[in-house]
Length: 333
Image 1 (cartoon, helix red, strand yellow):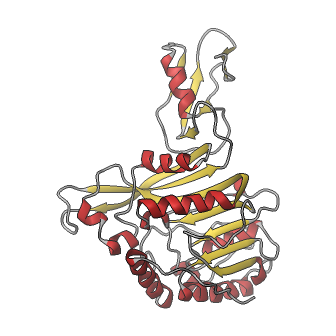
Image 2: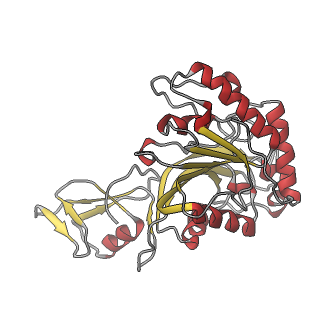
Image 3: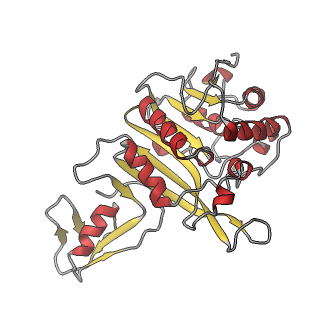
């Protein structure tokens, strides 16, 4: 299968900086260039070529079996060396099941070469499983509501506000109802100095475009995603006054999030940040009258809205945990 090269509108200055950076990274792989490399999933029969592993430019993982049941159509934006499109293909083994987009010609060519190498080492994999196309996150060449799972890894932090809003709208547009947008990006709850925020090379390196997590989540819910799952949050980078123009140490974390195209609840989005409620009263269960039943001394994952409502009751019979920023499904909202 040939890589599709389609016309893409001209980039502005900061995207041009990013384009040049990743053009160089495609021609000369640099392990850990911008992000903490995430290991290949350990799955039967799955292996990746060394060059593909060297080009693992992402701050987390967007591949999770829980999102990939059935025969999903998958869109991955910003293909890098092809590691994640290969892993997505493991769960979607049919022609064109995974669409991989990138705006950098050299990255598409490198990804194509890596996938052809992967075909030699993985008996289950066929190159035609992945449809590589040239495409811009701000104008996806994908029809409305045709994608089950869309993903991006360490991409959205390079955008400024209005571009980020447009990119999220595009992802929302192409997803089917109840489709999932899986994201991995840096976040930072410390105020980023304006000079660092405006340094386009540092932004392209996934360092200074990081948003506070609450702001990041709000961007998703403002677009219309009714359910947000924060699945992981971990240390990622430190910007030290020794090396960067900042008066204080800035700690950056990476976050893995699933935004689900559910209908928006009347009382606002359901955001899961890893909170748990446990009933420890005298009865066999506790029913709050709003659809939440807690069994005696059994942990129940709850969204932040439910956690707040249970806390407001002031009961000494219900323990509600702080956010752990780890959520693996289940519970109630």
